[in-house]
Image 1 (tube, one colour):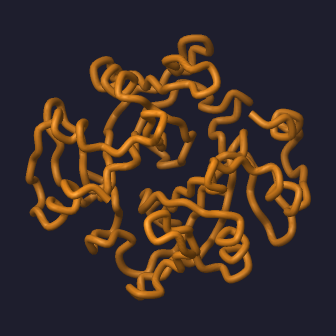
Image 2: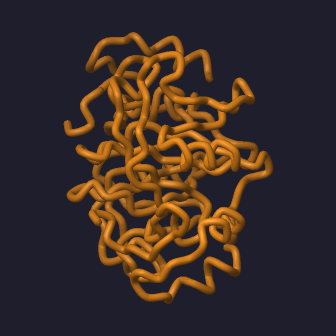
Length: 137
Length: 137
């Protein structure tokens, strides 16, 4: 855990830090990427999980539209550019050790490439896994 | 994306797969780890983000208590063992490419080591980041 995040953890509510400082302190992996959890602003359902690099994070903050880093294509991935299923950023958070992002978004259409609303459509049961697209069930 | 996950993506609702098959097909990183999102069963707030290896995942499924892999201590991390803040697994899901887990849990006390309910207490604003412990604000 980075010393800076340790140093701020007892700071009171509404303490503010410069954006640039936090961006610099975020922990990225060996490929320069940080994981991102995308959650539906309204239902709070977790819709997808992806990765950002510094460039895609800055673009997301500037445009308000989610831009990830595609690890398979090794390119910026402007979600919705090909599908029309854009994601509008509503709130962005990071956690106590600055190694993951949580984005509340407004989702146009399906988050998942399978056209399901959420990517998390496989639900574990006792000795099997079941296709259950509705996260509230 | 693994061929097996691609092969099942058009399967209808309530299709079931053997647990062992899915566990084998999950994608882990070069350290044998898969990311895990822990979400409050009741409020749907995202509480924390951590990692599991195969052993901790199997223990979690067997005991119903969240057991992660601590990357810093390089050991099984039975959440709550030292803090008393246990996490009881309610539902577990994976996503369309099987490279992340989503656990709905019942959280005893605080998920975060800072004693906040959720680890995601740092909220981005236009040019700053603010301490906001309440995820609904």
